[in-house]
Amino acid sequence: MSPNVRGAVLALLAMGLYATHDVVIKALGSTYPALQILFFASLLSFPMVSMVLMRDRTPGTLRPARPGWVALRAIANILSGMCGFYAFSTLPLAQVYAILFSAPLLVTILSIPILGERVGIHRWAAVVMGLTGVLIVLRPGGQALEAGHAAALLGAIGTAVAAVVVRKLGSTERPLVLIMWPMLGNFVLTGASLGLAYRPMELADLALTGVIAVLGLIAGFLLIMAYRAGEAAIVAPMQYSQILWATGYGWFLFGEALDAATVLGATVIIGSGIYILWREGVGGNSEYRPVTASRVRPDTVTAPKTTILQRLWPPRG
Image 1 (spheres, rainbow, N blue to C red):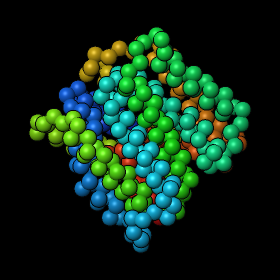
Image 2 (cartoon, rainbow, N blue to C red):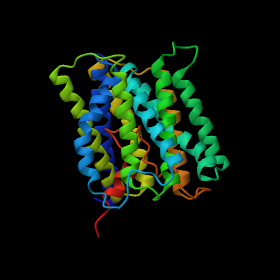
Image 3 (tube, rainbow, N blue to C red):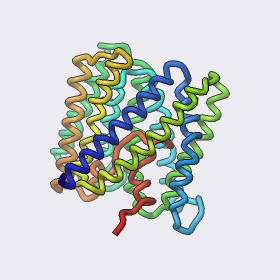
Image 4 (cartoon, helix red, strand yellow):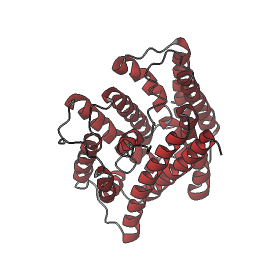
């Protein structure tokens, strides 16, 4: 098996685990508030994440070197996690993924003011087409827009902001700082939400929040292995396989059927995203390759950014 094929297979497996992670969120979301699920999933993630963080031997404290950017990233991470959990709890899986897939398009836009990236006419055309695909999925006026749709869009924006800021920070911050501040903020905010909406959890359901945590971390490490094995331009498009998992899971577990608008819109969004990845891969005008290198995925404590985990797990040799 060639390195690129091995990387693609590992990425596909990671995306399957991420999709299962999101299915458990949706299943629990029919009974419990989304922020309550996120709180307990985060709480049960702490022991595992703490063991990972113990690998950070870099001397220093939790005080960030660039507090403004770290604060922005923490806010974006918390926003993407909360909104992602809510969207998966309330909307069909395929619709949520289609909207979240707009994150690479937003990364392309945000890379201009934040990274000073040059975006040429080809990638701008792809961005416009991709955002048109989002409108096709949402079809304003053709369906009742819900809070879940707004949450999915905000989740995509938060994901994009966090991804670009990580590229901006580079190696100036310790991985411990980049993981702990969003964890602490998420824990405080979701914990406070329990005073507004809380429903006692059965033991089996509480255990499922632990499953969410385990799946997120395992998928993250599989994705690290995928990027080490294969080229980023080959591995990155595998994220779009989640729409296939969403279709299967949605039909089999939740009785969800794909409608024509979601299929068309998702196709346009995915096509635009793959084209941007290809343009970055062949060079184009890209210096930082922000989309290819960002490991775009809604970032939560249960599914931390693999670019950060990779700093704690450097390759051998």
